[in-house]
Image (cartoon, rainbow, N blue to C red; front, top):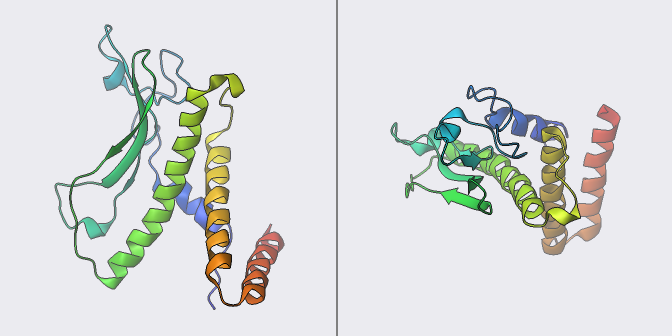
Length: 182
């Protein structure tokens, strides 16, 4: 059994998603919308502003089309003072994949799913602000979303395994390794 460092998935998530700084976007929304990246082109028109959160998308070599930079994009968006919406964008592209491309897609899909979970967290807070303002840092948001995905995956593994004791031992071993690395 090959083991991967426990910290690797969270590091990969941070590296695989683009940030406002990398896209040359100012640090904060001029209207004070906490989840908005503050993209200048979305705030140019003084009559209406478009607020958009960080976008998560699948962007690997498996796309096989130079005109398509991503598929499965997801982000939070709102016009002016309208309620935010969770936006999904697709290209309709369905490439056939080699085994290495399938592996790349699987890795990207984990990152994308963590992005979807963290975006959903922001969306839920925006729809119900009385529960408390969104105060998580991006690192905390990513860690919480990755933990949520990991626990869901562990639940499925335990549900589907024929060897529950063996699966629990394997999971404990991974957690012990992560603790020893910390």
